[in-house]
Length: 337
Image 1 (cartoon, rainbow, N blue to C red):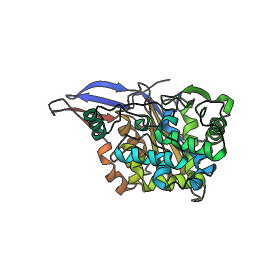
Image 2: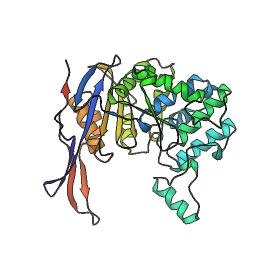
Image 3: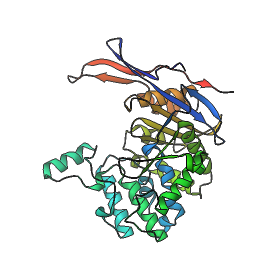
């Protein structure tokens, strides 16, 4: 199979790096609408499918029982940067469910938020598990366990009833039988799903199709994310800004090792799912690739394109601030009959 790079890094007008990967767009039936390179490229989905993993927070009744706000429900889908408002939101959720930071199983890492990193450094404090970008997802899972009366100590394990429920939901949304979904361990110690990218595109298409009913679990999650897109990443983060620019018509999520998904309701195709996987695991070129797909499919309005235009090309500057090149998309998607 001939492969073409999805993005090219230029330096002083010459090619400095080629970024290979695959793209697939599907509808809720799993039909492939567009692709580039291998539409069935297998990969771990990592954090890209947190919206599916958050469904039990609603379906278990935890949202009502613990009176979670939309801000709190949104952070269950997040890979947040550890800003003060992210940390306060997760801490309040834990308080509501009667648990505390040590009950999380995600581990601790330094936050991406500069102000919080500086605060930790100046106070000589170490990061806690609240700073983990997945702490919202973990807190939502703990809330679902408490609501269902399930043990919280083993919530990370694949044989725990919560993780079995999530595996069933992933199979239902992707159309891939659960026994064919590979299981690994993610960076936050939760199960990581392994499947063709066509499966995750189908999952996103079905998720946004289900969200058409605002009272459904998907609909409530979409409303929360639309209301607080900065909880998903941060103000200015690519996935947060797609959600903001489309006013919640789309849900977008990045995952580690360069996977990115978008579920969007369109006039032209109805609900669709878009997945991009970059083989080298480098997330830096991702915005230009995703923007290229969305623009070629003509699913963004002129106003949305203007709001997202800074993501269409990534300028490169050196340590002195000199303009030395850029990262640009260099491919076209192929329509399927």
